[in-house]
Length: 220
Image (cartoon, rainbow, N blue to C red; front, side):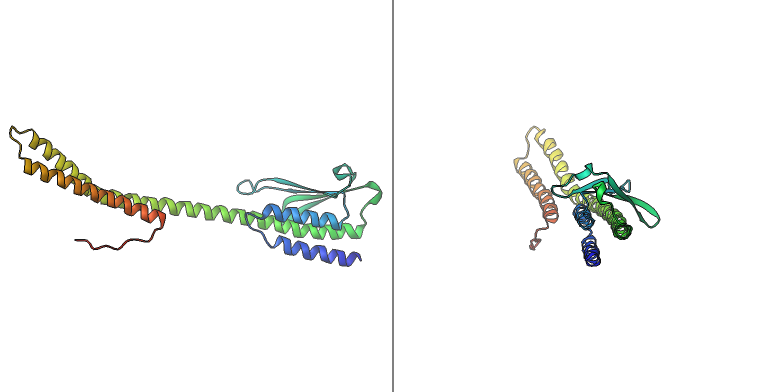
């Protein structure tokens, strides 16, 4: 029954095109094209999707019935895909010239094309939304890195400054005729402690970036 076949096609299209996501767009359009091609008993079908020039590229999907002449047929039914007043692609069906489509079937195919056009428009929206989310996440990462850099600079500045001051004091001490060994040992010990503090700051930053559970410790 042609009416039952048409209703089944529409139901399959509605379910299939409702599952649009950035990673599923190609599969959705491939499935929709096969669904329409089978209903139309076409030898081949071609879906051309107009890209939005930013996040969704122009694509061409082709379906061919097994054992058919494929795109070598000559009876073409080309239906523009229009959504929200814009042409978002075309649907082309190919069949043997001896088996042209009746006006009733052609009208139903145009109705099916409207569902595909709506899916293409939603695919544009989905791809643009994904791009917007990606940009927001990138900006958040940049902002976070800026905050981490500022915190790292602040926390490292004190031990690094102390290391430099102690190293300069050690150079002056060792330049004396009779250097004070005990004082030199104390300076070197201070340098070691400041180096440990700087390493702890870096280790803490690594923990944050790796999302590891922070370690709670008593600080003097």
